[in-house]
Image 1 (cartoon, rainbow, N blue to C red):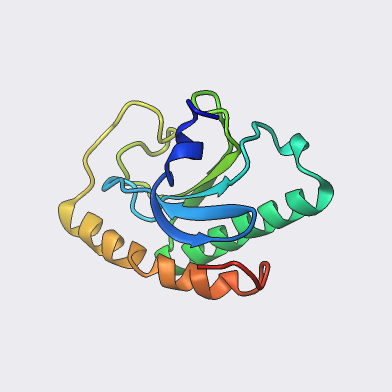
Image 2: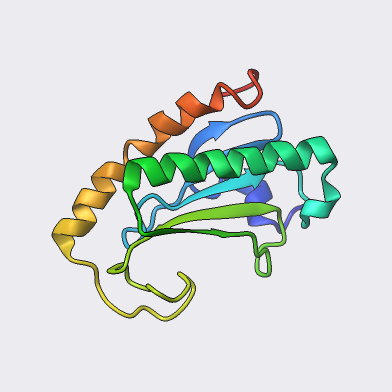
Amino acid sequence: MDSCRLCKEEGGALIWSGEDCRIVQVNDPGLPGFCRVIWHQHIAEMSALNHAQRHLLMRIVVDVEEVIASAMKPVKINLASLGNQVPHLHWHIIPRYEDDPYFPDSVWSEKRRDTNEVVALKRQAMAELLPVLIREKADSWTGKDSK
């Protein structure tokens, strides 16, 4: 689709790409570790996938969540698949902390605070490990076409 951002662009810094989907890391200094799992084909809803595709996509989302939880130690991880502004199937996996700019509201809410700079830098350093950890986990998903 010509007007779809996720068809034309990666949607973030590419971590891994397989036959059906890709994982990117979002460059948001207030939300280090924020990742997206994006289905390659332009579809809007989970129900457009067959059973095997849904199973694979959710396995990847949950595995990315587990990697983020283990590496980043957030108080909560938000999973979201909205698509209201970009109707291309994708999942947001967002580590949350009590002192992040939006907590306890959604990351699309109005900013409540600035995060302590030292804490933010420490979390950013932790988030820099995610691509390696996620690619290690990716070997179990399809066994082919991974980058």
